[in-house]
Image (cartoon, rainbow, N blue to C red; front, side, top):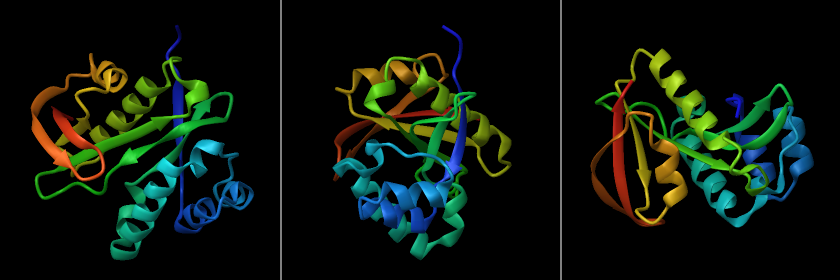
Amino acid sequence: MTAQQIRFVELSGPAMAALLADDLETAGRETGVELTDLFVDDDSKWLWNYRIAQLAENPAAARWIVRAAVAEPAGVVIGHGGYHGPPDENGMVEVGYTVDPRYRRQGYAKAILSALLDRAAAEPGVQVVRASISPTNAPSLATIAGFGFLEAGEQWDEEDGLELLFERPV
């Protein structure tokens, strides 16, 4: 299978607000790409609420947080990905990504992760990339395999429960 190519498109505050209102048309106009139903499902709505609050507290986080993932050259939105925020005091960023169910098992999760790792490596302030994954999430564990992540511990997440922490240098 040929490696998938991904470009990211910013999801601005107004775009996320439109998604919270189930308004894919306005969100699409705001972003310049056609967003899918994935962007208005219940899991995504939690994310938009969280990220809008994050932007209100720290507008500079906009360049780091979630973006629409567009497969090229087709120009089709296949999911979203980004970091949980800017690098912390140790130069660590945490990746997060979701692939629309219609596009799963086609190499897109690995393509999104690869693009996020490339971006992190290009940022002078980033030293480490983290991924936090439920121990029962076999697809996500398989996605990070081969990217040089090493298990670095575990944490309890209020939303997701037990998560294994994986890190790799940029």
